Amino acid sequence: MEPSFNEFSKVVTKYVLGSQERFNELKERMEMCEHATSKAGAAALGYLIAMEEKESRNIYDVVLEQVENNGENSCIRTDAIFAAIYKWLDKKFDGEGYPDHDGGVRSVLHEAFDIYMVL
Image (tube, rainbow, N blue to C red; front, side, top):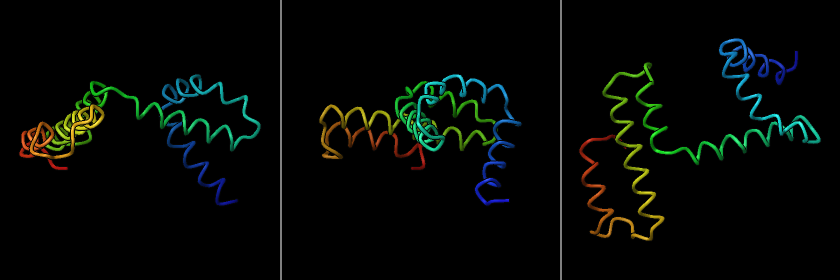
């Protein structure tokens, strides 16, 4: 068998056979990719759509994902939650034009979160 088919089979086994409901939801959301002229093009579009959705997630969803992550212990989850909130706030302040760590609000933000998280 081709190496690419082996990789495809691993992905199918992990995501399709392991979590059919999630796969079906994603498949339905990606139906628009059927208009692509090739399978590789459809996959690339699907990937780009997923990356855009990941970037546009709100902070509540990011934190909730960490809270529901039962594979990690509570200290690791808490660190991840604080880091996610800090990064979200820092990005918001950066978008508003506040300089990076200038002794102003972003420095205060960094100092406030620094002792509670591992970046």
